[in-house]
Amino acid sequence: MNNAALPQDRKTLSGLDWRTADMGLSRLRSFVCLAEELHFGRAARLLHISQPALSQQIARLEKDLATILLLRTSRVVRLTPAGHEFLRGARSALAILDDAAYAAHFRAALAGQSC
Image 1 (cartoon, rainbow, N blue to C red):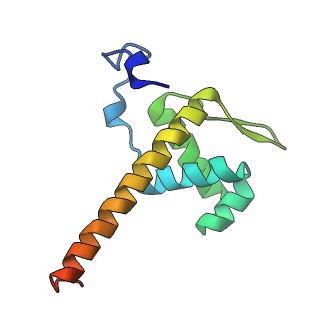
Image 2: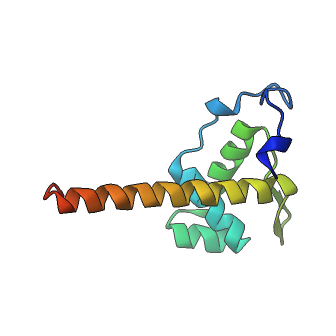
C-alpha cells in the first residue's frame, strides 16, 4: 500500500496510536519467520523458542496493533491482507536495522574500536 493512501491522522481508523505498540525486534523477527513458514511449529524451531511462546508473541503483536495479521485454523496459517502489508514493512524495517548494525560495526572496526 502506498503511504499516500494512509490517513494523515493515524488514529482515525481505530482510535489506536500505533506509536505506543510494542513491536520489539524479537516480535518483528518472530512475525517474519512465522509469515514465511506459515507453520507455528517450524517457525518456533527456527527461532529456538517454544510454540506457545511464539503464539503469545504474535497474539500480543496483534493486540498491540489492534489488527488481525494471521488467520489460524488447526491445520492452516494464512496472512490476512493486513498481515501481508505488515510483513512488507517488517522486512524493510529489519533490513534497515541490520544494515545500520553492520555499518556501525564496520566503522568501529576501521577505527580500531571493536569490542
